[in-house]
Image 1 (cartoon, one colour):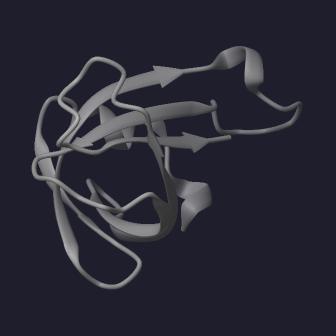
Image 2 (cartoon, one colour):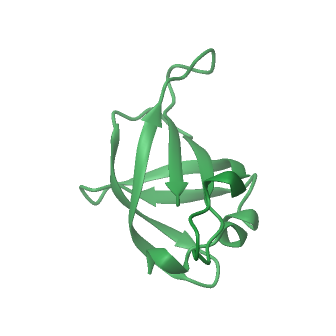
Length: 103
């Protein structure tokens, strides 16, 4: 299923809120913040344009990284998306900021 994920699936979610299902089964309300395509990272003969997604939590969380599940348009529940935390760097330190890369 992960191979089917394209940047267009996240484009429809930009600026919206959703729910990230964490590895332990708990749910974290999130905001889909940024989508960046990275064409220079594309592998030869690869159909997918590499891209990254930045999200932030809407409430405090101790979650750092792991395989999560996210509802995406056209695809439904997509499992095993690796989500990693990034430093707050001047943003609200009470929230969690996360990065997802699709190569």
